[in-house]
Image (cartoon, rainbow, N blue to C red; front, side, top):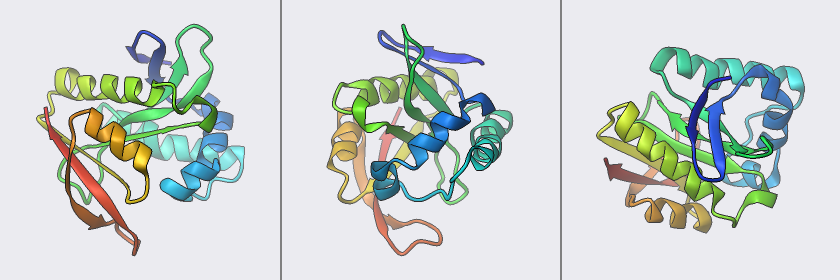
Length: 170
């Protein structure tokens, strides 16, 4: 597994099929389902397929993707954070999610800040975007703390629900 960005308390590394049990847990967490959506991942086999078709394919195609966020000392996985290239967006999208027991401790900001630095320094991006559910106050505060600004409301493809789109020049 390839380490991408250590911080003072965390490590961001590439997600591997061995992380399927964690991904299954995270993607079925009630907060993930509410704020991000149902990815229809219900067993280890579908979690492995999600990892291969999502993050692993993104690493191979773009050189970046969603990364596993783990505690630096214990290597306990706590969430995901990274950059996603979506067909319907001009710029790469900053995405993040943590298990609820790790929220409110600054880990989301720490991992997102490391990801922004990767976008700027390693991947030479000049702008990134992020979107969040309109009612997701925590994510909105985090994006603003990162220096991102509200751009506009958009509809995601195949979804009637509007989301807030944020952007940031790097």
